[in-house]
Length: 193
Image 1 (cartoon, one colour):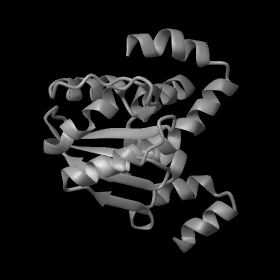
Image 2 (cartoon, helix red, strand yellow; image 1 turned 135 degrees about the horizontal axis):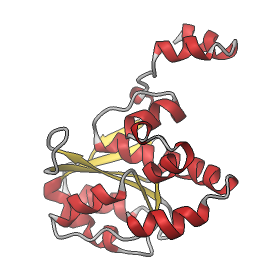
Image 3 (cartoon, helix red, strand yellow; image 1 turned 180 degrees about the vertical axis):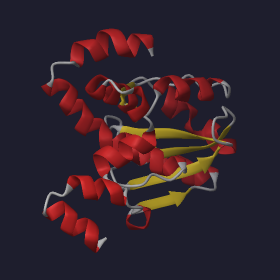
Image 4 (cartoon, helix red, strand yellow; image 1 turned 60 degrees about the horizontal axis):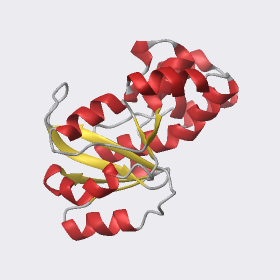
């Protein structure tokens, strides 16, 4: 971590890139919710107008079998819960008035649909934002975004992915607005997602 700090301070970005992102998940507030009561308590603690990060975790990489879900109420925080507790979040996830941030809305919607949940209220898809800003489909994975924008290594757990979606939502949304790409996002990307 010390060498990374020196590289950053001296603006040695090519050397900084060679060191790769750091795993700082131990400095974040991540937890697993193992009971129905804890999931409900977490969801009830979210103000109706508050933007919430949401993510799903596959049973194995590249699969669409849902194993767990993650929710983030504020940057640096994330909670996961097993798919067996997903019905406790159904009303929250289907509420269009509850704003949500995700990475790859289409994939999240498809995975939730297999469990009878229609995701509504997605206001920010950080994958679509990243594509608009970079036009690099290879650089839009959650792992790439974590490395590029947050300089951190993203683990596979859904609580980390929900934190990423929430943390990047405002940052990338502001960049989309600054580059006058909001009409493209609202009128083309979101309807086609």
